[in-house]
Image 1: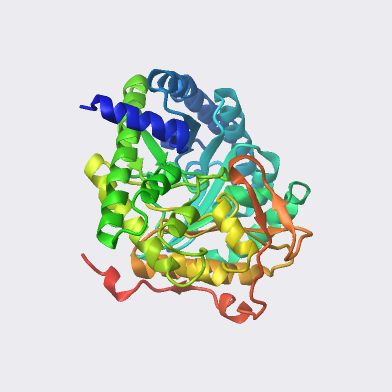
Image 2: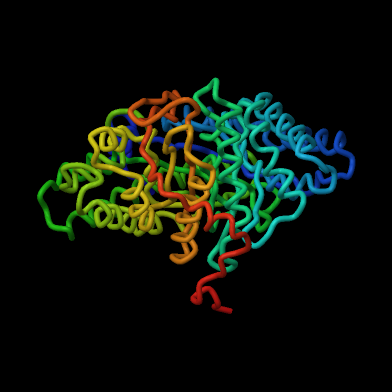
Length: 454
């Protein structure tokens, strides 16, 4: 039971510290929509989504009013489309028709994003995977709400370097196709290693084949709440610091658990997981970087940053798992550059580089996220960055990802505006040394020795 004191405390978190439920994501299986006829396939997809998710937005709004808890996004994730469309789609253009159907369904339902325009190629690619991947630049250029992801590796299988090479080229092409919008298409495209089946956050959300017919997953967020709590123990020992983060994460997760169970009950589908990730926004006071600075860092990117982030991530998880038995998704601390004012400031003052961000991804929730780089960055260089991140994920048995944006026509020193939760980002420099010969080798980097645990 939640007592009177907790109610008042939670109310303060919402009103003063930017606590919110970042997303209710309804995962929907499209496997029963498969059809050899492309027109029938699209019709089945649209009908199923608008039927199963018809009450999603209204339900989210009703829960907001009932509990007074802001629910920022209502989203949908679907079965990876490379699987669903494999029988009917013989060309990349065929897959684009599905992207348009997903976008039309999302618009009808009023959700802000729909994820799952995806391929899972951690060990190899089918022809359907290749066609979907080749379709991504056009699909993201002609849709508004569709998000795309490609999983290129896992701890169990290694890294598909042919897919990594392809994704460098696809990211460059996506940037060019959306050049009139500051290459915004790349902000809706992420490349992952060890992608989870139940992630509610975009752009990497998809409804994995291990999931049921439909499921509600919720992502909570509370960087501002954690920062405020740490302000009250400024200068205290690490023991007190850790206990404070754990207790705060427990309270934040309880809010997510409450919303998730109510949403599942009202929608008549099972409750899946609560994702504990601290997801920042461009708003002042809603920054993961500011939490790290409150711990005692002068600036993110300096000595001690990786240790502070590792501790934050671990304590958030320890607190969260006490509040919910069903914790999943990514669960940790996100470090997107464009969506976190503290990260932006650290880049602009020269303290935070891509190399330091890569080191931080060894201990944080995901990886190199919402990083803007010069538009002329070579495709092989982008592939090399993806390969580095995938290797970190593969060896450490964790999810890592790259959402990188080579902004067409812009260079280091300039800034790109994405708007809304995507924020803005300074263009970061990238090492000019080539890795082209390494990327062109082809084949697969084998799984690490500790992957053999049968």
